[in-house]
Image (cartoon, rainbow, N blue to C red; front, side):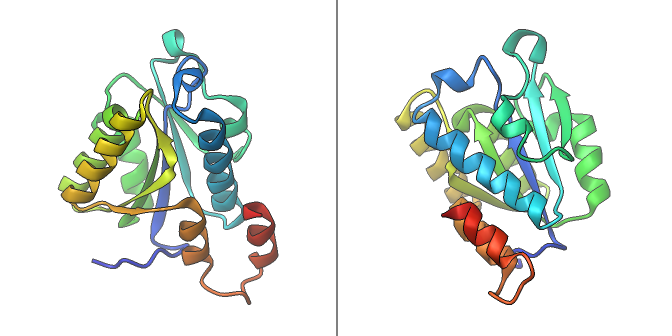
Length: 182
């Protein structure tokens, strides 16, 4: 298992940052701010982003801050809790042929956790940015993070992910990423 993230080996899956879900999330302002920064960073680095929406007819669409963070993101509607149980999502991600997935979103203990566990079972290296996930309660979020870690997910932060991918200060996007995280 390669634990190093690169531009060539990674996809970001952002789960269900929707209008009717976000207001109920624990520490929602920090969640949206850091998640949007991570998504913008992937855009700056020219990397693929998938945004899922759980039953948007009832839960609304992706909040503007997340949707506007990367205008090129692939938005996929789902009705399954796990994004990895959604045929369109699986097909899109498999076409990318990336062994590493960064999975962020809400709710940590439901849709995100089920996605992470399913992707681990499929042999992906899965990274969870702990500062880009939330649930309605801190306890649900924290227990889900521990369960995902125990199953083999790598728990990290959005800033660590971006600088891991960036690799060095000589990268042409260094100033943009540095400004983004400040």
